[in-house]
Image 1 (tube, rainbow over the protein chains, first blue to last red):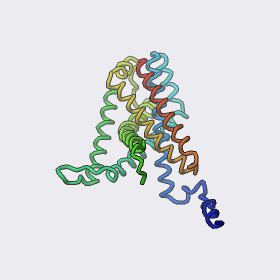
Image 2: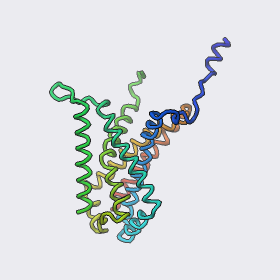
Image 3: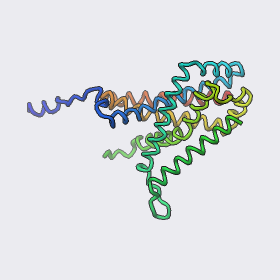
Image 4: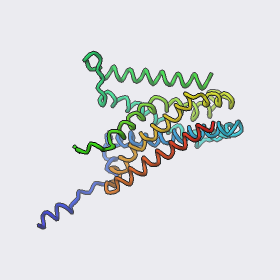
Length: 132
Length: 118
């Protein structure tokens, strides 16, 4: 059974950088990479929580550290990826979730609109809590 | 389609999905405030006493833990598939999954400890 063996051993090789060949592939990988920004957010939030728990001196040191140019650059990049995550997430949610009200499917546009309202509301609440 | 009814995938997908929602809603404003606006002096950061009081609130503590836990499970799920399929490491799928979800669970535990020490 040489053909059988050949078929089992033969594997189509895909280049490692296949995702750079098309814009849609690149966008897909970029969207997946927004998860790195989510990980950075968790690390940054926990560093803040630790500093606040360690006392006023540590909190001041955290604020000084966060003002370094390279930290601002990292956070600007993370913010851009985070916004990309939010927008792409709101784009796919109406496709993944079928919401029905009184037996009628809620149109995707309405659901996406509701998500943007929720984004604005949550942002406003956090802004008010932190700034007041 | 897998007929394995005890598969963990639906549960992992649920956590991925929930994490996607909470991070989509809360992460941009946090990174804008603490990563850009306060460091560049656009806005005045809360004083040490103010942020301490805010974070000690039980709802705030819960929010931090939920954001960290679900956010990490979301990221773990995406990174697991990106690393496995993107770098063509399907043979090591189980090890990659274990590393991703294991790290997420560990850092979530760290979050619980840090929040409870406030």
